[in-house]
Image 1 (cartoon, rainbow, N blue to C red):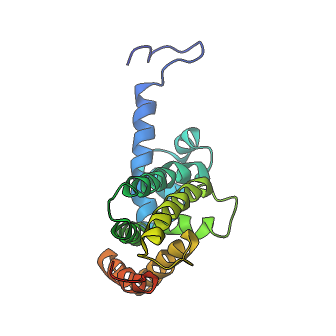
Image 2 (tube, rainbow, N blue to C red; image 1 turned 180 degrees about the vertical axis):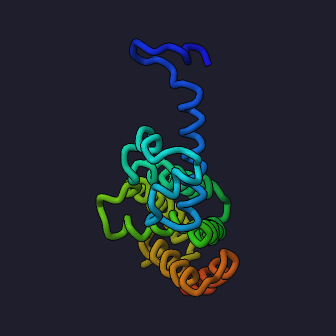
Length: 197
């Protein structure tokens, strides 16, 4: 990498090994957080990445910063997906397909489910802003589906998130998988409909 051997000055490019370490940490954290959730110790992430804890903290000064880098990106992806779905010609279909996607993602990623749960009660949650963005995307889908008459008018984005979080949390405790979570969410979603979806 150009300038990678420089040792002085400001704004120099990161060393190649530092870049590799950061990438290894992010990959390991994504795997560990998704499998075990937000409560996992950072020592386990460092061990999985093959780096020391000090190296991990040089890249991510707090566990919250590491968690936000991993889960925040995924929440932004979901928010973008919700925005994209608003272009569907069938608003009801778009809403319920997105709810199915959200359920699949939450059931398969413990970190995502933890983040959604924490952001609902803790304004200091590291990814609270991204959850707000996701809720805004869901709100847009709901507005279009409500105008179409495909969903009850008294349903809000917090109801959708609560529905998905509650169902996926129960599935996790029972040892179920993404397919079962999606099926149960689809059943519960029938209560949101005003007519054929």
